Image 1 (cartoon, rainbow, N blue to C red):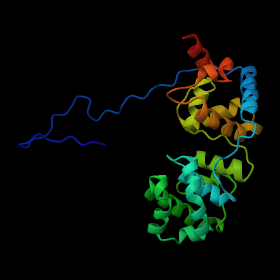
Image 2: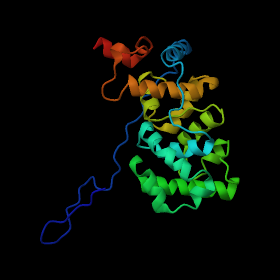
Image 3: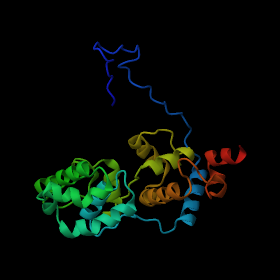
Image 4: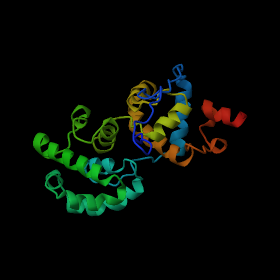
Length: 245
């Protein structure tokens, strides 16, 4: 956050009458629960468009997926997949990560961005696994979210794709697409997760997340959504509005 700089010659910078006030937050627009028939139409179309949607982070076990998911923050999955082969070979276990030299770990993950914070999270997570879970990744959300660097989004990725436990992963793509579909109104990821749990059948949670992530990347992009070419447009209030405008 930028600091106020006093003018040459000393003296304090004049304070604004708004100084110290928190920026107003955009209030979520209330929406009615989506029609179950429309929800089913959307999920059927997602099945048609993305029948093989799956996790795009390369991994062979829960620990590898947990590390890869931490690295994927503010980074593409493609970049993470370029980094992880050497990383996984060098550090095959949680104990290896826990005892690693920070500089070596940072160097291996540097290209994923925010490498110092990510290295700190990975080592903190690994030390907690060694100390509290015998070096193994737990298969319960309430235990995963207690690990350093692991929030609900990361935990749901690991549960869904490493343990087969259904979970909804709300990243920027899922949040944006589902707001445009008017499945949710909130921009808060945790509130969005719980709202979507009431809309999407539990058996579909993990696959739905992967499908919507792909759709957000390929079609329903933030700045230039391809509504005229979108298969979900007939069932999407945002898409219909774009076609009519």
